[in-house]
Length: 455
Image (cartoon, rainbow, N blue to C red; front, side, top):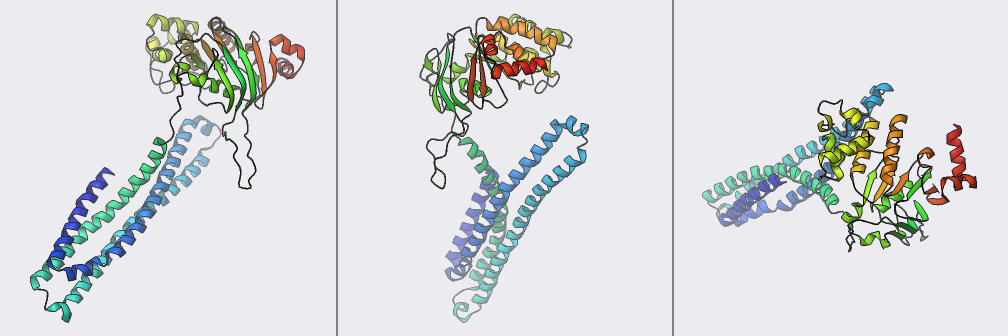
């Protein structure tokens, strides 16, 4: 756009200067040329709208091309295993053709707009030749004035062509700006905090919490009927004391991970209250609130950096001795010592050099190193083999002794020692208690327990 604006300013000033000279020499002949201005303006307006529309479509098409390529590259093992090469070729060809068609439309619009404007200007020039030979103007305009007007008109053709050419680039830039600023103008994450929190004591309470991903208040549809929220969490209430461990169990999609996301304020509850140490979490500054949590997800995110730096990501000021201690507790040294540079080995993009279990151990070591009062484990041992899981469970039990922990698990063997177990289904709490009390109830938890251990 910066290049386009430069050309537009330069050539527009040149065009206005030539038109000014033309009027100074002969306003009659110049007026004839100016009569075509509305026609040219209409053509430019129409072409500009088409340029912008096509440019927007091109951006969308290029996004699909990039997405398709990235998806195929990342999933190349699946594609090769299931013989999906031809299918992926055909899919990519179809997407690429859509992109090519949009680009051809842009080229066609650009190729057509320049000659049209030049033809219109040429007709004006021809009409000037005709008019100057009429009885009215023949005597009043000198040969020198006529030659000057014709020269300036011919000189106008090149800047008009350049302005038309650059218009396509300018509209592409405007379409890109629309996409970019639609993101930049999105509302920022709300930090409603008014209170600092250095280190929490460890109390957590959910009080009648309702949450919907598409939350709305008293909205009505086109027929005027009240649209109800589809609750991901429905009237969830529980309390957790310092040092206690709470386990969430239930089917996939029952709201277990959503509850932990609300604690970190990735989302805000639609109704109800979430309290830490008796204070609503909305009253804490976001940075202070999130600093209270160590989080281990089932989807481990690692960075293109060394093992040591990935472990110390949540605590950059950690000493090497602290990093080694965390790595030892998470059984990372077992494979790190076999690497060429040990903990200083670069593990590649998203930990490409590590297996799934090794990547998860790094995430656990990161949580071990963080001296946070709260610990969230979202299927933290799902990618570990039996031996590694036993070692990690020992490390996690040591870690959980002085921390309030929330464990999200499908394997009930990992949460039998939890102080409280909450069984969820479709966003609601259907059972809660200790492992033994829930087994004695012979309800949903007992059925799930029997199913896992029988199988």
